Length: 431
Image 1: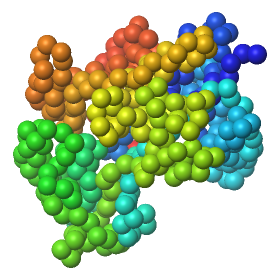
Image 2 (image 1 turned 180 degrees about the horizontal axis):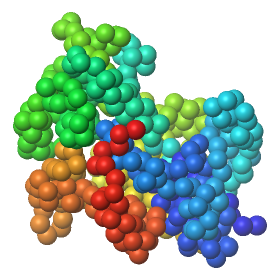
Image 3 (image 1 turned 180 degrees about the vertical axis):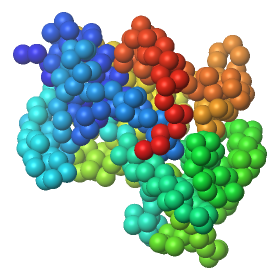
């Protein structure tokens, strides 16, 4: 019987893994590969801040799962995983309906021999009062699109009025997502003004970037943190560090010292956690933020037939006491490549290899024209980069992801197509 590999989650890691397995195992009939996702299209998650600001048109950059499966010899199932039976080796998919409540797919089960869970992560509200009720999030394309419409509608209403209507935004969490979103939103308003939208200017926009810790970008070297902090101040963004949030209300954000920021829009970008349903998957071991505990081979510590990768996996760093692989796109990319090899070894009855994480540096986008960060190499060590050069390296990460999915030739054609179409469409999405 053909080995059945089921991959749950079509994010950066899951889709790259399905593509590689399809090309090497599916095409030769050595395995039956199925990708499961509750969306029909894929967009690279690190670009969601550009979707929210309108700098990126997600309809042009999305990748259709059905077409990708057809091109790369795997199968796609539209569904959302809600349970697993480890004894029977089946996963349960929830019933899905459309916006009118009409059933698209019934509740059903899907059998596997090897199961890979790659469902990513979401923001962690840490139980803060009012966050779920009053904050926007940036965990999915739908949320990014909704945020874009909220901001654009505000300026379109102001455009139809003779009275200026300033917009104030609080972004909670000064990690990479919060910093990138703040810079991109500021840049978007400048573009909106360039299209003649009245009342759209830096004078009518106030952005607060709120961080509970001592500095922004706490996971990155202090030199980068300070450089980005200075750039944000130049843009007019008010950066508040050592300012934990104790409550979010309809009117604004209440800080720990009882200061209240009266803002129109609250965006929560602090912390991460894996989806809550992972805690209840037939006894699979998880940590305090719902990540599946895995061995260095990326196998669950509870079940050797179940693997996890990306943000939803708590993977130890070999030789480092207590440290885990960080939740970054480059980690998911490396794990997908490694797991493709390990699953081939499993089919051949050979021992699995341990995953070794390699940190190639970190880049943070400061809107569509700049970036800052570090590059790491065996010969050069750690190199600090900023400006246009850093932005080019930042964009190259996305092209690498596209190349893993589409191949180098098709990515080159897509880059040429993007170059031509830029001349015939606005620089900002205005709908």
